[in-house]
Amino acid sequence: MKNFKDYNKQELFEKIEKISIEKAGEMVVTKYDNRVINTTKVTNRYEIFDIVKYLKDKISTIEENFKISKYEFRLTRGQQYLKLISDKVTIGGIDFYKSFYILNSTDKSRRLSFNVGLYCDTSKFYIISGVRNVGLTKKHLKGVTQAAEDATSGLNDETFNEQIEAINSIVGHRVLISKIREVILGNKPEIPQINHRKFDAFKNSIRFAASDGRIKITNDQKNMLLTESDKLKEIDKSSDFYIDAFHAFQLYLTLFNTQDSHIIKNETERILGITQWSVRNNILESLGI
Image (cartoon, rainbow, N blue to C red):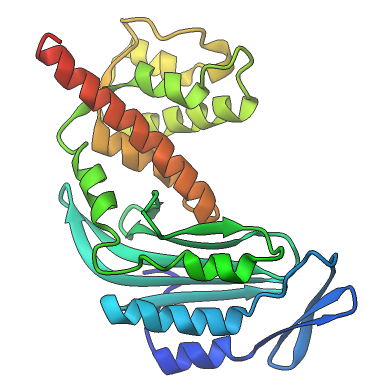
């Protein structure tokens, strides 16, 4: 796994313990190994978060229920980011790994977040969706410390079951490109340009998959995929086609593999909602309901 190191608790703790965060008047000072790496001005609403204690506590809590095998620890000026990889689970013939993501910032550039999800090393994408009693994305304001503790109160060996079941539910089913388009673009009279860009990126992923022989498409369908989203008023029947729901799910999430975990979480729930909705409607249609 690129960028990940074999898990060594002592080694990781030694890196974490080099972090020091202090508030001096209106300034938050971040040090690493006794060297100042960032200073940021804050208001009196800002709450210093003890990321050192939090990371160490959460690592120990995770170890109680999961076998950590890999880790990635990044510290860039005012940001601290930890990813942990643990037990393997196979869905639709693809291996995923139960994973944990903790992001903190002392320069106000990122919100504090704790998320859990699945990581696919072969296709390089992450799945992060809602889990009861687990998860947090919050600004560094008063109360953030307590909120961070509450965010992991439900962490146990059943934490990933809901995600796994949701993804398993779309394996073996198909979805129409037109239905995926409807949900990505949304139903507002004025479609945000970002939504058009998301759909264009998704169409490009399908085109690349077709060029590799993983998907078969006609010339009409290829032309539709080449048409910019904001110029594509609708997808007619000659250009519409079905795609494997699980494959569509993977292609979409690959677009966000470098984003923060809370963004991946939002997009996971978006594409999972699309595929599950389409699968349900396809089943009802086949039953004549």
